[in-house]
Amino acid sequence: MTRTSATAAAAALLIAFTPPAGAQAPLQSVPELDLQRYSGTWHEIARLPMKQQEQCVADVTATYTPQADGSIEVRNSCRTMEGSSEAVGEARRVEGHPGRLKVRFAPGWLSWLPNVWGDYWVIALDPDYQWAVVGEPERRYLWLLSRTPTVSAELFERMRATAEDQAYVLDALKSSGDTVRQ
Image (cartoon, rainbow, N blue to C red; front, side, top):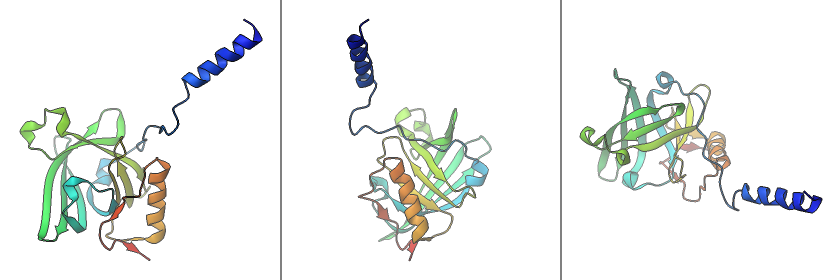
């Protein structure tokens, strides 16, 4: 092989394995998640809007309770303009991926359908389990969560930066009420 054809072959391989401009690296979940420590109530600090939460104006929480069968009860609640709203669902681990869960809010009798289970990936987690950033592989949804109803502006910016580092576009990020202290 001549030097020119070797260079051309190397260039062709480089082009073939270079992702297109604007391509994102796959979303990464945390390598470990202790569900006992993750259990309990989390307060939503901010989110990328989603249809199921349109009516939520403040006091958004998610409470995770491990069940005897290994699943996790998920209880989402919020304050709405008309009062309050609550949804109860189920989460289960994703085999081989400790930081990933599948969550459904559809009735149990529909749980055999794959489309009723949504991705819930913990993409950042405080070592003391005091805050978390949760998303899904398409980066359409995102939740910034805390064990407390408010966080400092510094922590909020750190959580935002963590999401941006994972290629989230946060132009539509919505605060979940008065959740960031100045």
